[in-house]
Image (tube, rainbow, N blue to C red):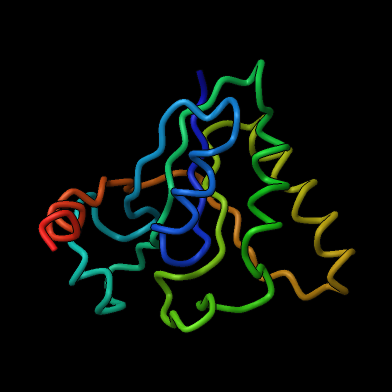
Length: 146
């Protein structure tokens, strides 16, 4: 089992889409890439923490490769809009790939480059080492209570 952590706008829709792929064992929404180890939804929305809304995927590489996950990532969001997806605007809605090892970094660099060629150099997707990931538990609880 491996993990992938991806930012592609609001995390609810992507979580559902990724959960339907064969080889994805578990999905979880959270925040990543910020300045602090923990955060809340309200703090993320303030724009002061630098966290992105992310989907964390646990996957079986014998059934779905990291490259296939990244290709799907590029197909289900707009990687050419800076800090926004559709009506959602803010740094927390940026397009970013968080890698956990050098193999993932190399695959992500290649995939970003390929998509940048297809999209005439307009890709704004960032590539960063995974840091300060935290599960969006408090938001999950509020969402479930509604």
